[in-house]
Amino acid sequence: MIATPAWPPRSLPRLFVRAPLAEGATVTLDAAQANYFGNVLRLAEGGEVLLFDGASGEWLARIAEAARKRMTLTIERQTRLPETLPDLTLAFAPVKRTQTDWLVQKATELGVVHLQPVMTRRTVAERVKLERLESIAVEAAEQCGRTLLPAIADPQPLDAFLKELRRPLYFADETGGAPVSEALNPGPAAILVGPEGGFTSEERDTVRAHRHAVVISLGPRILRAETAALAAVTAYMALVGDWR
Ligand code: SAM
Image 1 (tube, rainbow, N blue to C red):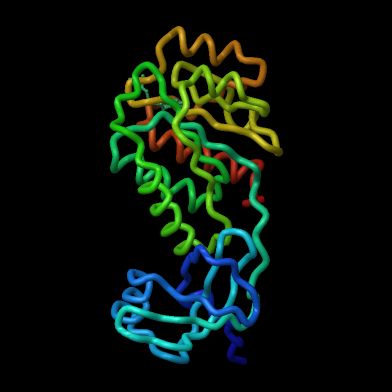
Image 2: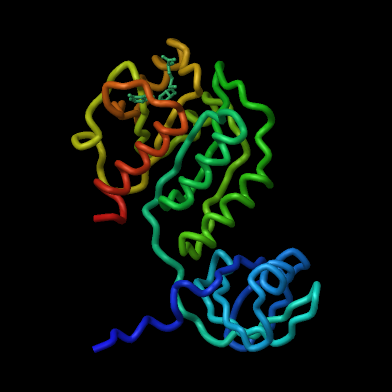
């Protein structure tokens, strides 16, 4: 028997819109979105798409009007409630732009809820462009099926981050720590990963001394900062997150 494909198919185009969504509502896309749907995906009036607003879940919408630079959609019905994500913060020392973009894209796909750029002594990154990182997170959420966007905070100095910390901190330290299989516990948490040049010994001592710090090892090899971030988030999601 031919399996009835799920309706609507997850393959319908998905778009994040900054307008509150509800049944019967009309949404007008901006020129770039209208161009993407109309001229790139060649969608026409009557076509179906999935929309999400980062708060109310996912909605099936139908193209009501399609002009070259303008498109309006009518919301037909809710297809998914907002997902519940493990309450995970990824605190990372920004690296070079392409690597930071990559890190934000992957962290979004993996389900990270908060992204916190942390400035350390050896952080060599240029200015962190939040708008750019937000648009990368939006695109990753559109692609991976998220209905909630990660919150990306303004960069913060390491000591300020540690001062405000109110949850377990899994400190990825290449000089040694507990295996993730033994150290990670379910529940709200933060993961801290250093810059390409690593933490200074004073910074390392300060983090290790923090009352919420749990020092973790990501294996015997020195990973690039963005790889370490991905590995730590993956371990968290697999062992105590929503992959179980
Ligand atoms: N300072 C180091 C060096 O040059 O020898 C390398 C720093 S590493 C490129 C960047 C960050 O990734 C580190 O600060 C740490 O947070 C994390 N990291 C890399 N490899 C790791 C490992 N095997 N275990 C735990 N954390 C690791």
